[in-house]
Length: 285
Image (cartoon, one colour):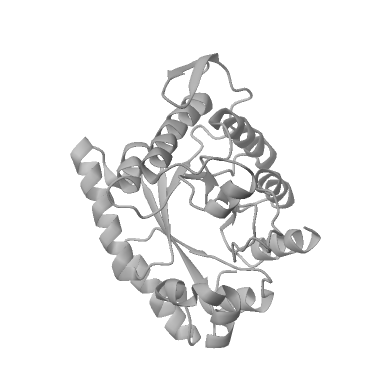
């Protein structure tokens, strides 16, 4: 944690605008023998306390790990700690190894999506209403209160994922922002178009939804493989690599595809030199 906190402060000093934690109990390999990982809500609060300018996000909390009231209250507190810089990301969850390790039922994908949809509705009520009531299949509220409210007038709720039939439909209905990881600019544009079609179906202005993509940064092939291991080929379409100019050009392709925000998705051990090189190339500071 001391190393992570130093890195957060360095990232802010370099001119980046957004830092996220992630919500897992195991490391990025997701092997049963590789569990070293900081808890997300506590890390999110530490990130809020250790920074002063950047947005502090979560891409994304798993809807199956905590009751939405727990996360709603936590996000309000984190927004208080950060003086109004908190973003709240939520997804359906997928890491079966974590569910099984802790004795949690790993529902079929439809049920996980149903839980996600109710989770967002409950959270939005608690973040915004003085008194909240909700009756669903998985969650219920009865004259529930969540105080103090966020500093922000509207704390942004992000939906993470690229599922075109359900995830993007949920994002169209409820999200203030949407994020998808490790896809090419072409795939990002295609999924963004699906999101916009869902918005058209329900009569929502798609410009209300901030669209972001998570990409890796690996200046060399060796760096790519050391970061992502057996996942290398799966994530390769969404990894920035090559020269500084090639990286800048690739970011331009995401912007042309409709990305409002591009996030560097880092894997431990984090190479600060890579972050500094990227900041220098884009003249962030």
